[in-house]
Image (cartoon, rainbow, N blue to C red; front, top):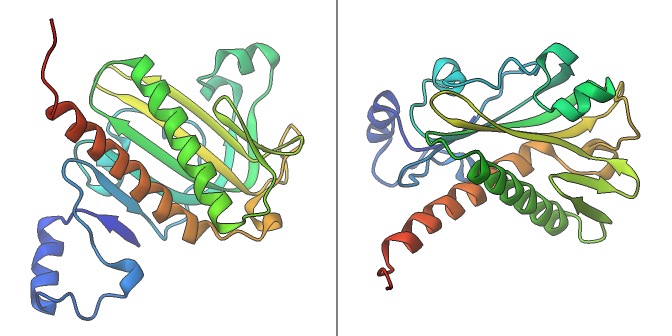
Length: 220
């Protein structure tokens, strides 16, 4: 499990280990990012599209407020659970034997801002994949990542009555996909290494945006 920001029970456990954090693996050390949580679970979770709803992160992981979480599991989104109505009109669902999933929730009401955040998340993911595999021929087309003509990712941004939501899925094993697809496994990339880097990069960008907004003055 990887996680940013500590819940009260974790604070107590950490204090028992000492201020230095001795006993935590270095890659698993808790970090505090101002207003946003990030979390990766070891539990396998199947993604059906129903998970993309308000407060799912809070209900599932007991993380409240803006957050991004990651998990690995199969993907099978039927047309009735599809958010992208263009795909519904084409009659194309989403399916893969295994994916690395990110779900992100922000408690605001701007769908346009959510779409921009979605594109940022995809761009950061692309950067990290290229860092880990410099020879990777990876292209971003809108909110999708491709290797050649094969699709590596699926993504959507939407709004709920209380928040905006993003889902990004990276194929690990694309078996069953309705389109030509490629997976992290074939590319020699490890989902468990990618996920924390992507989430930390995204939270850092969100924190940076808050800082940038707070340091400027208004102009006539």
